Image (cartoon, rainbow, N blue to C red; front, side):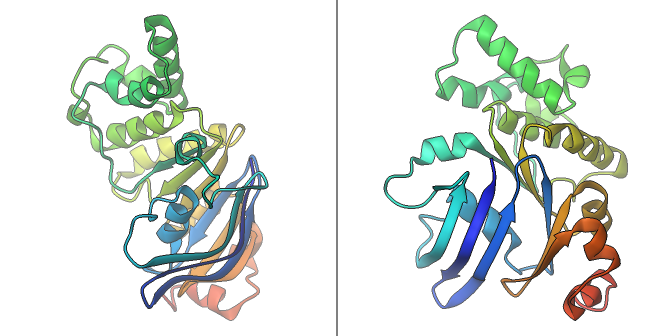
Length: 249
């Protein structure tokens, strides 16, 4: 499923978070969003999932399409949208439940309640998040007892349990050690075979390693988007070169 942002603008009162952004994220690819803090990267992810709909004074203009279907408007079903689009935030936030129940939460809401079917969904999600081998013998344990890296992979598994078509990742490895970060990065290569992935990261090396395309945002505007290899080696915009060489942002 592709994601299309068509002249997307978002403002909160008089503060503009995104300004006329047009971007296509193709199915089966990883698109990295980079840019200075506060440039609108997280706002973009939240706009795709409509998580800011209830924020006072939020105004969103332009269009967001998932496989050519609008996600905005009264005809769009939020429950369906959030099942099709999974999101994992910077801080892992396991529920105060067992490992199993954390992953089973979404499928239960979708009506998957029988033992064998639910077990299959949970197992598949944990395997796709590269966590099964670490936790298969302690699924009844409190998820909050997991290490930081394991908790983040659990949140990834929880998102994957809904069988989404799009996966949005907001700084998923920023609080992890290099080994835990590597495990998640390695898993992204496998996940992109089935998903469209958008990755927000401050780690430029990570963006260069794992993404197919990279987009630079500055002050809510899309400055440049290109194949990651080209953007990092031959940027077309002076602001891109300044940012990736550390002279700006």
